[in-house]
Length: 125
Image (tube, rainbow, N blue to C red; front, side):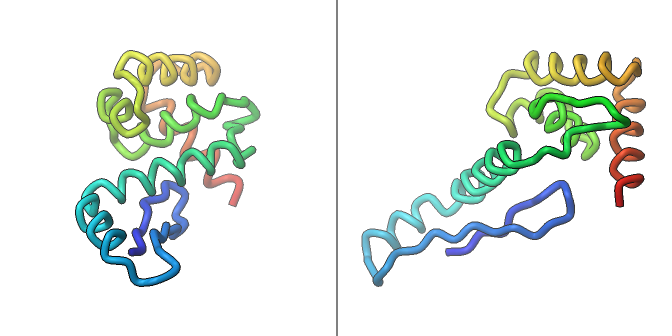
């Protein structure tokens, strides 16, 4: 079973869950968790990307992995509550990271944060 993953950077990653031989128990488990596996795959991909990515500098300011990740989700229009759900953190923690990112970048609003992030990404292409 191969699951495509939504990647905020425009890449097209996927995660495959497989067995070395046809196994009825594996197929039943895959079918049983079919709705949950995309979430597992996305979380795994985001964890690996966060660990391997050094591209967290916005206009010369280094954001923490969590600040950058929350800002990316904010740029996709997600609320702090939705970001918390996606990242497995509370709404307050997501808002905390967004506030830190805004403070570091010297902006006051979420829209300004998103604009700085978006402009920084486009200037590095």
